[in-house]
Image (cartoon, rainbow over all chains, first blue to last red; front, side, top):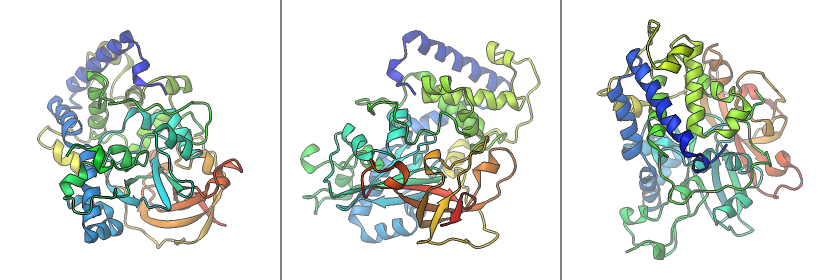
Length: 206
Length: 219
């Protein structure tokens, strides 16, 4: 599939018109409440996004009891922080270690843990990622400038069912006395998909 | 269906090019396309498996040349056309010409936050206990149904190990066709990369595929 920025302006204005036409038809037919559509946009534009997942990871790093609850029942442990809903009904966490790096893909469509990461980026839904994440993950990681030690094995999770996977990246060194709030700033979206690692303390402004 | 959506292991699409500081939406229409797709799902006229099947049934040239929200929109239009919710002419003009279908529900703006937060869980009470358990060696079936399946081509006819039992989940292969939820036990099956992709794959790497029991036989 093509990247959004490849599309020319006329195709984009056609889409604006097409979607407006469709929306007014579906509202006129009584299938949709227009204000409810605004709520959907507002939710995924401003309320649900990767800061949710970052809070989960920061808490997992800080609180051994919470980490254990995530391992036992991730959906319930994540719901403790108020993060529930569509595309996050059945959560599981996978923990990165020096031995194993986890990485998540959906080769068949675009399954992604919305409740903790929000809507997926274009590359996650793109043919290059979906085709190669399973067959040559180390090379794909290098395209994200992630170079893992040779001895680190890669385990790729293909989201073929309704299970949604959240990667817990390794906690960076030099953060022992950091608060959860401060730790969450180190947790990038890509580090929770497994196409990135957590930021180092020197990479975030104090 | 062996369609263009089943991409695992293809080698023709080039490198991954993440866009720096990618915006969440690339234009107003993407926001509305997302909301229309999610919103129409609440009408209850189809399930998530049927909507995936509608997208993967689009023509390969369309599927491979359009963006994901264009695929969503086109899939949505087909779902509505097939069920008589709209007509081709209505889609072209945007004006209502036929009586609306009675949909199962229309979520109001007041109820939408709760509806989004509730989601659509697919775990069901099992009618029998799981036949397989963690550590079992299993071989996936070599199946090529014309209809919807969630067993990717690269993982068919391959032997791996069960590493988790996820519970009893709605079975997409029947649910997509409107033939019922038919809940089945779901397992995480771990495959060695070389089993899937041959001797050029990196030794030691693994791929985990979630597989329903009807996809599996004991190895």
